[in-house]
Image 1 (tube, rainbow, N blue to C red):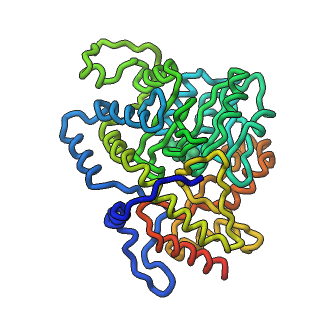
Image 2: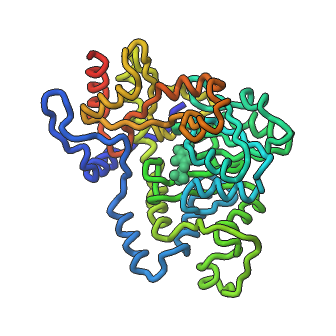
Image 3: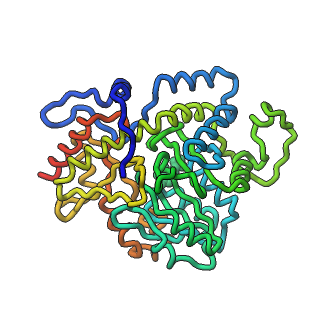
Length: 412
Ligand SMILES: *Cc1c(COP(=O)(O)O)cnc(C)c1O
């Protein structure tokens, strides 16, 4: 199931040289230096490449962005890719391209980042929350089907933590009824579903926010096998002109280009794209390193009854290990999750929360109170999940420190 190729020793050494977090001294049992839950890994070569773009005279969308789009589409095998300022921008463009608005329903898990649901609401459409599997945190066709109505326009499954949603039955369900599907692939750069990269089929949106598996500072990529849709996203990305400044200046298109339809301003800069090119070249190494760290966690946590890792979906042929999420058995532990996180922080261990269910956040609690209590697996996990530190520059000792701290907190 976890088929990432092993990482070379020199490569690990390279990570360690760049990682100031790993240089720590032990004082008693507790770490002296704070271990963040995530940290991007930027190489000197990437920094130099960014410098080169800055000196080149062309810093916005240009040849580097075009090259990054090409490289990313050949990496995941998709037909078309459009580089954006964020994954959130991608979702905004898609809702706009599909003309989703008042009266339309969009099915999404509430166990996701808030951006999707915010945009559905801002478009004037109605979010319909689907529950997730208790142990993978991902939705499936069986849970989605009963929620379909004549107004359903779009389904947004979320690949979680680096594992894959079982997409085939969802696409089948949607195709029969002419409903669009977009895969939230923010966690899934490098993830393989049944032996194929996420992004290869259908429509997917990736994120390059600094905590994701690869980063461009901020950034996103829209990937689709539908040429017309990709073209529309490309147009809407840049004012609805159909061409961007680079096209106009470098590829001989005229500055007289007209607005074909009102668009947005979500184009990626070449500064970000050149960083993306460097990161993409190292993505498989990052994932291999993450996989080793995750395996260490799984081994070390196996005999701690209060800590429940996620289950890996059967259809995940490569897990990208974006996050290492555990659930705290709050009854056994005798403390709630927030206390657990705070206790770890006091022991210099950073943690994350992915995610607090959207429908439990203030705006949605207030405007959609009817959703509360209808998503048992989402709600159970929302109160218990916690993301442990996981990033390529971490060492095995860092993992052991986290586990030691967890044992200490639970022994209290
Ligand atoms: C990070 C994330 C997003 C948003 O990505 P941005 O690039 O920050 O806009 C969307 N969905 C999920 C599940 C995420 O984790």
